[in-house]
Image (tube, rainbow over the protein chains, first blue to last red):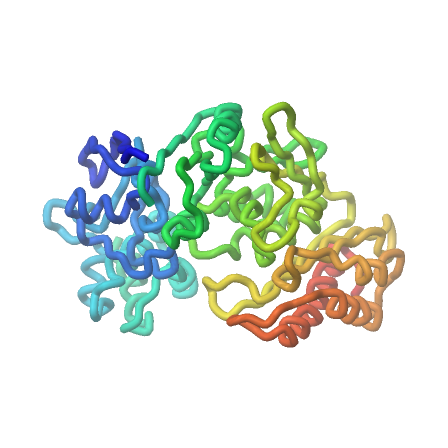
Amino acid sequence: MARRTKRIRVTVNGERYEKEVSPSKSLLDFLRMDLNLTGTKEGCGEGECGACSIIMNGKLVDSCLILTVEADGQKIQTIEGISRHDRLHPLQKAFAEKGAAQCGYCTPGMIMAAKYLLDHNPSPTAEQVLKAIAGNLCRCTGYGSIVDAVLSAAKER
Amino acid sequence: MKGIDYFAPPRLEEAVSLLRRYGKKAALMAGGTDFLLRLERGLVQPGVIVDLKKIRDLRGIKSNRAGLKIGAATLMDEIASSHLIQTRYGILAKGAAAVGSIQTRNRATLGGNLCNASPAADTASPLIALGGRARIAGAKRVREVPLEEFFLGPGKSCLQPNEILKEIFIPSPVQRSAGSFQRCTRTAMDIALVNCAVFLSLASKGGVVQDIRIVLGAVAPTPVRVQAAEDVLRGKNPDEKTIEEAADCAAAGVRPIDDVRSSASYRRAMVRVLTKRAIEEALREAGGEA
């Protein structure tokens, strides 16, 4: 069977892209390989670890479990798109201040999950933070410093 | 995964005709949270993917006096956070909220959860307990199947090759009715070791159980109703002994397996515990004095 490609249009971090993509390419691979946005990480590739979390049309999703063709016409925000003019997002600042990143691999996904939470619930409890990051695995921190960072960013905002 | 073609038709009829055109080469996808895993692992090798998410008729929650209609491509999170479902069909909201992470619930759909036909599907047990019915679109007509007859085995539903699950219909709950959804699992993200949904109604006065459905997940090849346990309670004003008898009956009526998550005997023990808890909670909520 001949290799087919599809033309898609997406807006990523405010920029519009029009690209030919293979229908079987994951959105994660598209962001990393085609757009060079390597902040979004691949952990498990199976929707278990949350390292590839992005916000698409206002919803937090795992980009490894989405085909690029499904993103046609959608608006996407990745970790690269949350700071403004080199000013860190309050969550990024809080993660740095509280030592909430150790190896750092889960951090982009963790921050996107935390951002999604704060977008919907500006002053969460510690328990609500833990629930909101249930889909994001961290093998280093034990989550304590991450929860602290999210709570402190919530106060900042 | 070479040379896959992808269609996202805007209308249900087009999706059905794509299925007819491509036959076995075509695979249906909604949220993709299960399907793309299977694609990645080579467990499915379709030539054509038919994405159902663009089809308006498959989206949304609508209610009227007869009951509630939920489009098959409605997101899990829309169901879990719907005020209407939380208040009138609470056990379904709880089941939907138990599925995966928020990342998953923002993609996964009700129809996908059902059509994958996992015995552990957390929306299946509540829907069967609520008397839910599947409306299935084929080339010529839409047929309706009670959800308890929808599942045939692990990964197998009664859907025919040219059919698409269109929506789920749940009849309006009668007066003095209530339910409970119970689940046990290892971690927040894991699938259920056992889940249990109970929905019951009481007679117009007092604590006599008029009707009851007890449904268990992850303890048989499909979600199962345990009618013998229901019979113990129907027509009775249950005391603690009757409830325990029903729970024993439920434990005796399931066929759990040993697997990586749990042993069969542990599952059976948990069936007893969860069934008892669910009956007690449903009785309390419905206004009985259990």
